[in-house]
Amino acid sequence: MAILFAGAVAFAYYLNKPKAVLPYFGQDGESSKQHVISEFNLTDQRGISITRDSIKGKIFVTDFFFTTCKTICPLMTNQMQRLYQQYENDPSICFVSYTVDPETDTPQILADYAQQKKASAGKWYFLTGDKKQIYDLARNAYFVSATQGDGGEDDFVHTQNFALIDKTMHIRGYYDGTDSLEINKLMKDIEVLREE
Image (cartoon, rainbow, N blue to C red):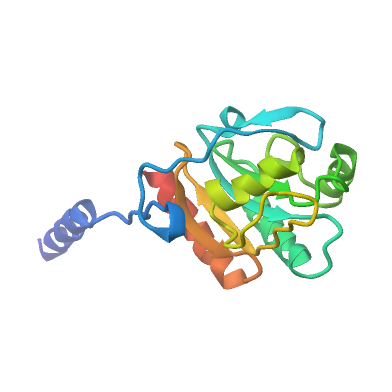
């Protein structure tokens, strides 16, 4: 009888236990359910046009990098690859890496890079295209860069921030893409989003 009672109490606690909820982020890190990722039209490593609607309805992690980077980008890509391997077989999750050097990082360069990372197209998107559009996304859609600029010839974005985006295009978390402990937290937060 005591075992049944204890089991019933534990089950009742489990049912009534508050579920973890991730915050929503907007400009300047403020809480905002109104902010959603803006429209974009860029090209992936296959040469295919990718828009916001191409990934809407999926949880995704995004970063901004460039293939010739020798400092933080290799660390970030290794962590993104770790995430990719963890969720490779989950169709509800994808990964989006925007190049901040679109003049160098053509679709062919990105395809070669993706192949080196064993990343399948349609699961991990490496995007290139108009520099002004990419820099506007970094600064005004994802808020991963605090620097000012217009995406012109002398402008450059270099950030280690990853952003976690939910199925409705809301920002739900920021993480240091060079830190494995932060990526562990990101994986836990992905699981929270999967339960929403």
